[in-house]
Amino acid sequence: MSTVTPPLSVRTATGELDDAEALRIRNDFPILDQEVNGFPLVYLDSGATSQNPLSVLEAEQEFYEQRNAAVHRGAHELAVHATDAFESARATVAAFVGAREEEIVWTANATAGLNLLAYSFSNASTGLVSAESQQFAVGPGDEILTTEMEHHANLVPWQELCRRTGATLRYIPVDDDGALRMDEAHRLIGPRTRVLAFTHTSNVLGNINPVTELVSLARAVGAFVVLDACQSVPHLSVNFASLDVDFAVFSGHKMLGPTGIGALYGKQHLLDALPPFLTGGSMITKVTMESSLYMPAPQRFEAGTQAVSQAVALAAAVNYLSETGMDRIAAREAQLGQRLAQGIDAIDGVRLLGPAAGSERTGLAAFDVEGVHAHDVGQYLDSKGIAVRVGHHCAQPLHRRLGLTASTRASSYLYNTTAEIDSFLEALAQVRPYFGLTAVEGK
Image 1 (tube, rainbow, N blue to C red):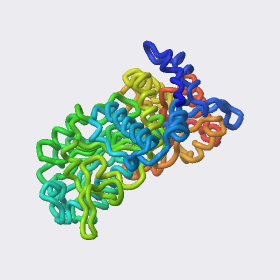
Image 2: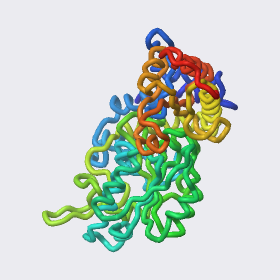
Image 3: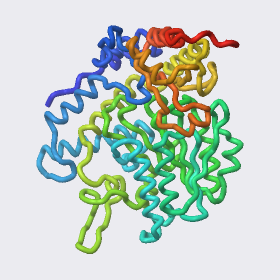
Image 4: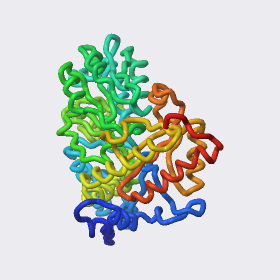
């Protein structure tokens, strides 16, 4: 069998992750070596989708070339190799987030994981389930609590759960800077709270929420805790067991992996009690014409043919991140995030969203350019070869709270350099002059 080439960054990674190593890391990402509109590509949209190193691309190709077969369904040698690769990938990803293998359910993405949870709670609420599953039932008088800063993926499924069951959706508001109103959290989390679902780090603001305090409040009232870790698992050292959350979700395409693969984490005893959502082949132990019995987790939630090659590639992405060092990556991105925040804050007519420059934040920054729509900002930056995200970032309630309909977001990752951040800031400073807007008083 062929072997996957070790990433260049892993072979050379020592000490602080600085510009010199970022340049070496870039050699592992062929897509970054190109020009856009006559300029070297500056990719600052990793918060939406990260790029893939060669080791990830090769891992998926190697699977198809050497091991492709149906998993858990055959006794022939290829099927055994495919199943081993699939379950080895689960073990690798589980260890990366401080979980046991049985606590990781493969999903298409984080959105699918949150919908799985919401529909499983809905199934538990029918009353036609085991006594063990009744713990997830919700109905009139119960409350699902989320926050005003959530991505739609961690809001709409809970809205739908409330619509189906008669439970009430409530939310923790944010202040003028976008930070959670923890005084309101203490007031809102109470005996009627059945689920507390919140993001670890905001995909718009870049702030890191107080997980320990929120979990403690939920534990005091017996509520389940659901963590959206899409913006934390790729960028911070995250251990779900240490955080003591009940469930969590994350997506492969935001952490150097392929699209079409993500994971739902759940404490094993909870996953084993949770009613399944999708049903069919591969998740059953016995089927008659009248009824079926289901496998324990995680297989009870993995009906049908799974994204096997994507899981294998995600494990390769996890290996790349682990070998580079998550603490090093987090420290590097904190530096880039501060450089973004300070630079944006210093530009005339540009409003930085989220924590003020100098405050703790991840490696992303969203902003509003006075007098210029976010889409126009994005198009101008694209003309300079700079890729950013524009729009409401699937967080309309948060933008509405901040008095905006859209914003522009620059998000960095381990392969970005300070020179790229500076190129972005130089281009951003020219946006308002390009559209003929004058200086803003007071800045």
